[in-house]
Image (cartoon, one colour):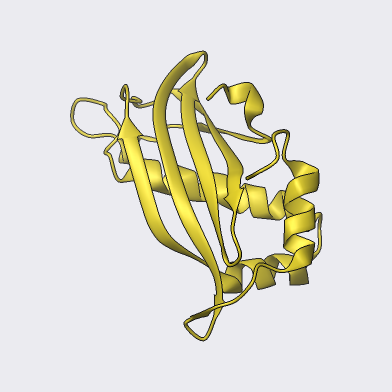
Length: 141
């Protein structure tokens, strides 16, 4: 997938604590980078509405996460973490992620989120669907 298809791009620099003795990012940190990007995604959709953002955080849960390692990131690299919603189901959504170092595609990932309350899945609210469709460059399926 081309990075131009992603509506959310978040810049970060790899910190010393995220790298191993060889200066390579430890694999678990990529999920934390995805989490940073999705937090910014929800924050963007909230458009300054703190109550809306709190509700999103309270009712969206990761039920599956995958990471594909193409090339490693290294200490002090400047990275771009990209996120986009690729699928909107009745109560779940799929978010695709990519991590790039300039033009170089390093990491791909995907998380499936379920909208739920009290351990029961609920339909994704119409307002959330509307915000996602308005924000995305490529509409989710």
